[in-house]
Picture 1 (cartoon, rainbow, N blue to C red):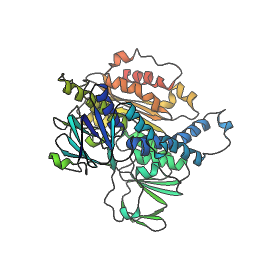
Picture 2: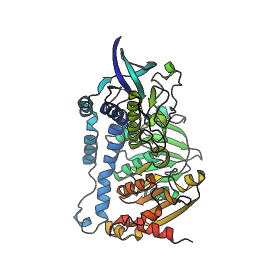
Picture 3: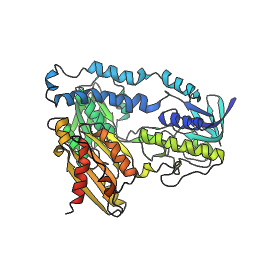
Picture 4: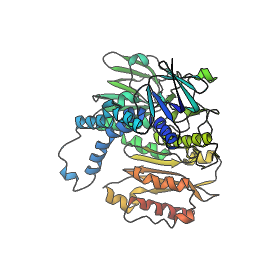
Length: 461
């Protein structure tokens, strides 16, 4: 068996693994990453980038149709072939040459193959044993979860991967699930011409503020809240039977009910850990004194941007420990991923968009906070009316009354995604409401909603 030694060995070359390896190299250590599929991972080829490419063209068309002057210039509908080609371009046609070249330029060694722990600080990859002087990092991500439904696996359902990489648009698409992936793909495929049926047992976007899920569900043609699939069959088409006896037929079936960690076959048993489980970590992403787990595998926040944030914290912590420096792992410290627990931003690219950060009102109350909720109709903001005719939306601010700071913020409406970072800064910075009064929004912009929410908070009932 060949041998090689590095300061840090990372299993998984997705966005998290790449960023963590780059961070430790920037800190003066050596690093290698091991990847069994494509460098760049799920986000680059089967999630963030291709799915948003599927959604963006129809979003732009919708925006133009809602604006007099632009509306009259439209002479046709969506060009599906052009959308799919643009999607392919953003997925680099499922070739990772560019990302592999970036690793080489960054001074990060790449080993292609299936990496597995081989004992303490050791990773075996296709006959090569990699030894880590300081840390091994598991950044293998997650995969779509398939529920135990009679006949489901034999029916060859789509997961998020097949949906993101689809080469044709099915006439009829059934979707099991109502979360982010289900809602975004329902939006995308409806806009591209499919008749979509969403079977959302727990409703649409059940983890978001209730008004968000309600508005997204209203925009989709066929949402069946509470529907539970009990069996699936497939011949020329897909046949679904629901718990109430209803039968449905579709050309394709997408299952989007959650994720499962990619930890089943990474050698966890060799270091006394249980394969197939989410990995528990501390605030610096450390499992034990030499093993780290960053990104989806630790189940803290299953979002690419949060995984990259964890990678930066963990990478810096590994460097600090290697140098014998103090690790700042307290709340909001350089080496702690505190935002995972208090200020996770997320955008759902549906119609309308849902942008949120921090806690929902229900989550804040469950955490024992004494809160006040302030809502405002986004349509009543001058900038919204200028942005698009018939603009509809809602904003919600969740305030911790004891500290008079915002702990949660949700926006629902066309193109609200670009408004989110202001709310993220307010939540992370714990900016007192009295100081926010002095953050004057420019007029006429949709951001004027900040002023209206603060005014609403000032007018106590």
